[in-house]
Length: 459
Image 1: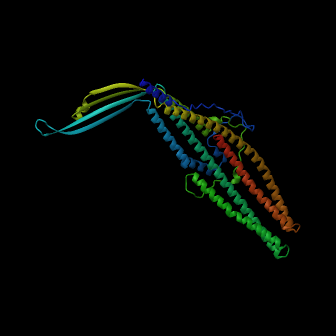
Image 2 (image 1 turned 60 degrees about the vertical axis):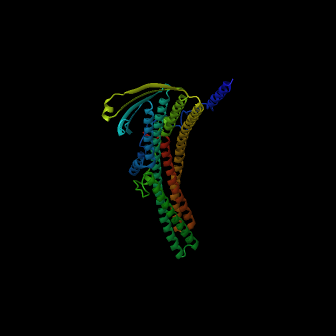
Image 3 (image 1 turned 120 degrees about the vertical axis):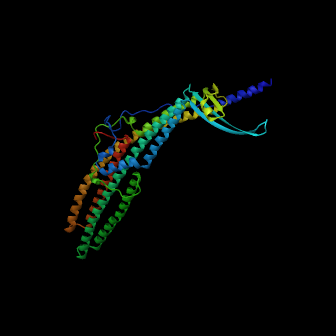
């Protein structure tokens, strides 16, 4: 009767130890669209050095420099080394371990017969071997998880390369566009200085009013005030680009001018093999594989494990004797360990691994969907910006002709300075819009390169 409460207590402890959240595996819900929203072709090979299509020697040199010295790139490469070491560590668990030890003891005792001190030295050596029989594949699953983690880090490094190359290309193109905006502003400033001198002469000769002179002066100063702002933006862009190159903030040498950059024409075919090469998708996929392998290892921890051990030792009063003698004492054995009272912790670890696996699945699906969104966004942006740029270029031609007519009418006395001033404002605004929209178009193409995991051949 006294043993019954003890048995009931033991049963309650065992049941409590088996508690689990029982996280269910998530079901995939990803649907790959058969084509892009825009009507582009199904396949085209990837181009690894897509930035060379801009035909700017300085840009090529800067991208190569960034891929060698950029901090984010270097950190990503070091993570590869870290995860490679983790793979080596996990692979070590698949093989037996062998430990060797050597000890020496110096002792002083007293002789019972003579009463004199007696000194002695004892050398002892031992070998211990142990092997975890991985019958349930826990160690193998852990190794697979480590290898998948290494693959994910390699993909992350490729993603860092792609991001840095895209950022350098985008930053360099923006820098050239700022140069072009400064060029347009300085040309407009020169034209307005000439207009101010003309208005001043006509005012001094009584041909025009003081109001027109003040309008010319005001517009001149407004244009002049924009020059420091653009120069500051150029300095900021140079500093940002320098950091991307792994250098201290400094001036950046240009290889060409903005007007030489021509927006590339999209090929008739674009890659549909997006999943096969975009680095962040590959990284998410390998992280999902690693999570599956970790889950398998966690489940294997719930099963009994078998461990084989072998030990041997020898001792001698001299070191040469220790090295010459074979093992005098040895033992071989094995053990089977089955988790009992710690099953709650092991079950909880399975739940944790299952939840992490589900998170990896959701992250993978989100990454894929986001990739298709980015491609479609870039394709639509390129199409719309090309239409906008064409209209603005035509507007610029009309604005130039309008200004020419207004200047002739003002000089010949057929209209007021206000007409010329309005034409100058329109042309200046249109020229800046052309530069900005062209820059946006080039940036959209760079975004498309990045979204596709690289460029394309035949473009």
